[in-house]
Length: 115
Image (cartoon, rainbow, N blue to C red; front, top):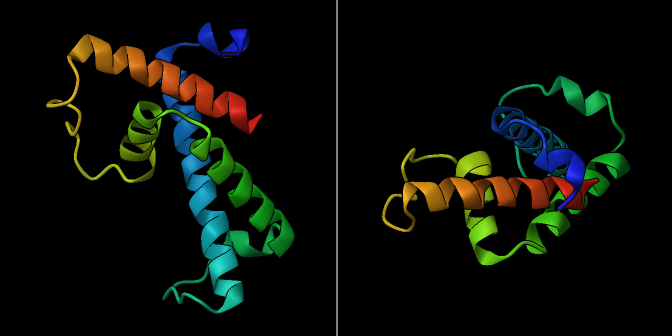
């Protein structure tokens, strides 16, 4: 884990990861729209801000970083930041202290792999 991130406050780490997820979906939607595989019923302004190649590279970088994580880290990043449908999804898997310890580790590893 990078020392820079381990010193950051938990809230800041979570916000940075949320931002990565938002940008990932914007880039992914733009690539899908351009490829004609998916049709959104709204205009995406961000589509014009980056070229298709940059969108593809960004989505690949995020996906590669995600694939390199261990199973617990993938589960936490996916459920808390990318597809956060159920707030307490982790309650049957981890104790509260274990969950927050694993979450901090998962976030730091994920963000370090993106850099």
